Image (cartoon, each protein chain N blue to C red):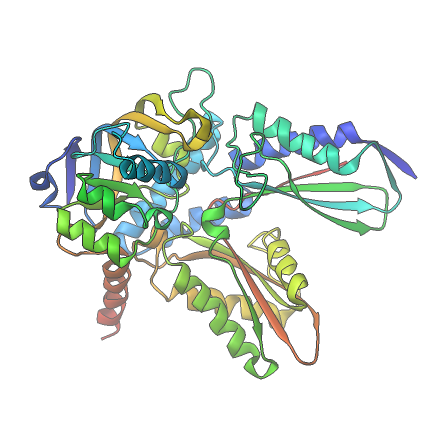
Length: 189
Length: 279
């Protein structure tokens, strides 16, 4: 099943999504990797405001290549999400709704996804040129000193994503390979 | 004795950095093409189709295939009858600096592993030099992304573990990596040598095109068996499930100690990059 979503999203928007569904996401997406997440935590610890509104937001774990003159963004595929596991549950509890990256998450993140009615979506790892095509506008909003890891505000149109973790406890990284292997057994049977 | 100017090394390395990050090698393209047609599982087939589109788009728009344009691993086969006029290593680092700057490639290197300040120009390169007969200098730039690099493993097995132990170690590495290294993956496998040598073998194995089997039929057979076992895991493209978990793998071996059986697996992805020039 394919869904079209626009950020900011609500819990109700995300409720129908199931692991293995695809999503075309439009609207505003913020970028942050390890270093930016660490600084977000420091701001929260200090009781200071975050550089962007978390409620219903989507955070994309990406460090793009520098844009050439005339380009909106360089190559922009996802980085490994597991490095953000230490930070994500806190952000989800504070209102973040969508995480975008690639690769496995830990149990604490899975629990936070279910608890908050959020989702974890995969962008195509290694497909940086393709993912860049959906980005219509880019603005660095914070921590420029972090270079490719600076926080960017992206405006995306029909950004192609796959649901990995859904709000009901589904995990495509477990169910996808299992379903494929089961299809082989049923053929042999 | 033949003289090569250091500036010629710089120019070649800069060009190869851009080329490798923009155009995938023919063997990887061929494997991706074969698998996108052969893959039976619908989501996997669709995913491989998108990876193919990405590769073509990068080629047409001269964009990096992947945003992780990697650590610049530079392999040099230096003829022993070559004299380099100028500073050899500095010339290679300068090539990386120019290539990553002019090519709009991402600067992903921190100058210190714990204090972590970006060097801003992707230097230093990781340079490996081998002296060979003759008066040529062959340069290979193989930019390595860390999504897959982080999933690599080294094991000091016991001789009694034998070939089954090696197979289990390799398959376990792929299983543990799961979706993280952006499957379909490519593996470089080192067997034998010492603690340090086996890792070099694994990395060097990634330089061999995946359509070229190991010249020793025993290891060519082992390569085939491992590939079949890995693709029976069901991990599939991006870990979404499917037949295509691994595009190909290469084994390199070296003599080892009576008491040991080192094995190393260097995990790479569907964006396994290498570009070579001969000076």
